[in-house]
Amino acid sequence: MSSIIVRGLDDSVKQQLATQAKEHGRSMEAEVRDILTKAARRPHIGMALLAAAQDVGGIDDLTIPERDDVARAVEFE
Image (cartoon, rainbow, N blue to C red; front, side, top):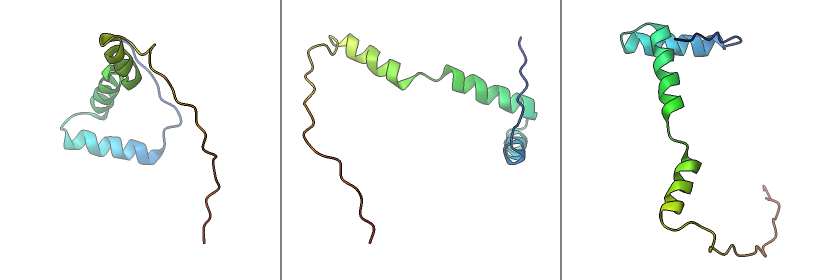
């Protein structure tokens, strides 16, 4: 199993992790491990959408309409 060191972590983030870990009844290291594992295994939405499009025949035949609108500045009054 690998180890990493996170430098420059804000103290408030460390405190929040410690609080979460306590709420979940585990060490801060176990809490961070769980958070990182879930984040790394979360499916990438872009890749999921691409796979779904490929499952139904792809997107090569889709036409993309040209934009003819002009961006305008927001006026705050």
